[in-house]
Length: 218
Image 1 (cartoon, rainbow, N blue to C red):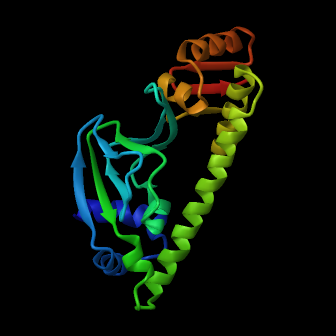
Image 2 (cartoon, rainbow, N blue to C red):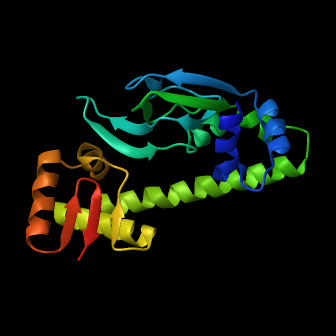
């Protein structure tokens, strides 16, 4: 648990909250830890959830699936990231997405309403509440960004808009993205072959350089 505590201390959710206060919050949130295998579903679309998750190890993705089984990655979940926090607050609202483990993963679950509805008015709970609001606000902004990518008229504009934002996010023109080709195609809601072809065209035209997940804007 010590290793997991270090992950929590470093997470945005527990920013400015010490280890003793984290223990207080976990106790209120009746936490539990579960292990998942690669490709195992953590939550299915239409599930109602009482607890949100924090990824302690491995990787996971939030996905949308259509009637024919086509998948679109809404977001990737990395170590220390949260998921399902909004739906766990609403607790009777069914999920409109699924969450799947893309590597063998360990996840800590917390009942957020037990914390938010607690009669205790401690410093730790107040900071925790502010942190969760900041996280939700940031995710809303990221969702707006994805809508912006999808609204672009063609594949080239989607790619360049996405890579431009990644460069600005990293503060450099040469950067890694946390997506492989299929994940990038799913994120941009495009065909993988078409994505690879357009990336190759952009490279030939001298607009970008890339090697696997490492990109450079020229």
